[in-house]
Amino acid sequence: VQRSLVLVKPDGVRRGLSGEVLRRIEAKGYTLAAVELRTATPEILAEHYAEHEGKPFYAPLVEFMLSGPVLAVVIEGERCVEGFRSLAGATDPTVAAPGTIRGDLGRDWGAAVQQNLVHGSDSPESAAREIGIWFSDLT
Ligand code: GTP
Ligand code: MG
Image (tube, rainbow, N blue to C red; front, top):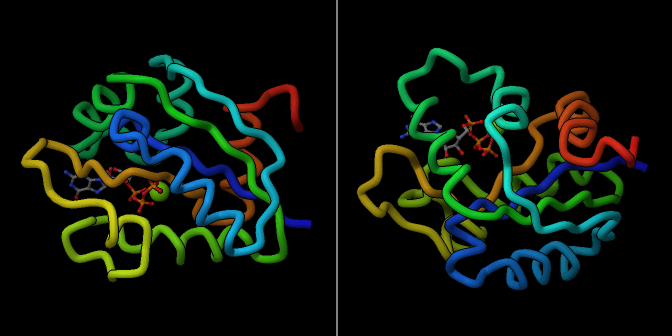
């Protein structure tokens, strides 16, 4: 069965929305395989965001992701990678569709990086890679 890595980013944890994100995942019918509150490190983020290295938003993104704890979650279910991307909504929370996590709960806070509450793996290959980064004991 497919797995995906979900992160409730520091803005979501700070705003007390971890439970709401987990609620939506479970209401959709996916299973929680692992849930852990943890503080990222520069090393973890360099691996996790390797594809974005060199982009203008990379440094503010890493700084934001280090600004507080994240809730790291492994979810399970048929096609849960694309299913969670659909639950999360578009990257920019200002225009993410209502009904989605980012569309219902997020907005532009005027920061250098889009604070958009959640991360979700974008392919089954990314999911395997990212689960290995965040839960090295689970692969
Ligand atoms: P994730 O699930 O977090 O990976 O989001 P995503 O797949 O929708 O976006 P992507 O992987 O392209 O970018 C990773 C993160 O970088 C985003 O979630 C945003 O927080 C931030 N980001 C991406 N693109 C931009 C951008 O054009 N401007 C700014 N300021 N931030 C961006
Ligand atoms: Mg991404």
